[in-house]
Length: 266
Ligand SMILES: Cc1cc2nc3c(=O)[nH]c(=O)nc-3n(C[C@H](O)[C@H](O)[C@H](O)COP(=O)(O)O)c2cc1C
Image (cartoon, rainbow, N blue to C red):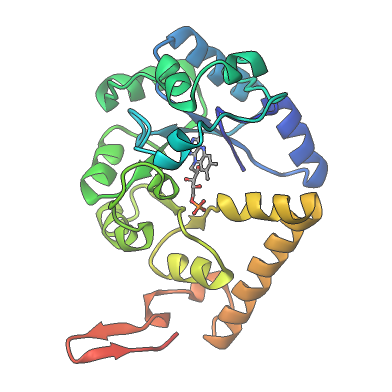
């Protein structure tokens, strides 16, 4: 599980809840490049001390996207909720728009050559780049000595019109050539979507909104239902494509689009 800097619970509460479900659960800490390096370092040190194994540096958000829906509705996180990692209480959150709040702490001058060595100097956690969509950035992450990249477009919430992650994934996998780990998120809505992402070379698939929808539907039970649904769909997809293990899931399981028309295999 990846813990957002905007999480409403502390890293220690989230770690404790996760470990209560599965003793070997691993957590990553999502991080923005912040103006206040002292606070950024504090977040990192806390995450490491709590046993998080990786930091996911979000690289696709020097600013927030143009979010007309949030602006029109004057979206604010509901009263009573805090952002403990950022050290904001409900009053701080209510007192300004989400956009203004974001701009108040986020450094819009992202610079891998400055930020990644700095991260290395303050943490022993793995360093992953979240928000990669191209071969060039995958190569840059290798050059900078990162441990992995998360092919992500922030759930399509940043720049309208960017590639779908399932389309960007193959060029990132090809550029990586096994030299860096590749995960993917964005638009994964079923076990069959998971299967396709693995077939295209992702080592691991993450989901964002499906967990929130499960939570809205029936709390913890709703999230369990979402996970069981994805698991069953994934398993059936493996069975129906003749895969006995996850290692058998390769590009050969997918359809091939030819110039004379698509050939559906899945
Ligand atoms: C309500 C919401 C809040 C999010 N907050 C963050 C965040 O604070 N940091 C971040 O890196 N990504 C954030 N994301 C993006 C997710 O981490 C993830 O990349 C995305 O949701 C994956 O797409 P999916 O929801 O289609 O599965 C957020 C997404 C949503 C829907």
